[in-house]
Length: 140
Image (cartoon, rainbow, N blue to C red; front, side):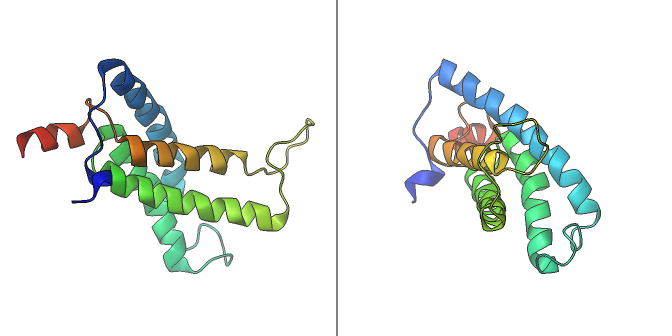
């Protein structure tokens, strides 16, 4: 079995931290994904094929829901990680900076990079003991 599917046991405080991250960032992804799943094949216009847009929309909304529950965390993390990697590449290709050092309201790749980092954290650390994944693993 792949070790990433069964991350090591986490302590109480670490699990509380992972729970906080899952709840906050999972909620953000559900909110970001909600408008996209209303028009999953066309939310980006013609920038990407409709199928890829739908995959991104459902990765954000469904992945966010899974993170909140701590359910299928590795799969949700891979979907969100892939989506954020594409978002980062999109921003880098346009020449967008990491952060702005002024008050201008221009796009940056900082949010995509931060979310990608959270996806890596949950992929490698797992959801913690306060999760559906942990409850299901204990029963098996």
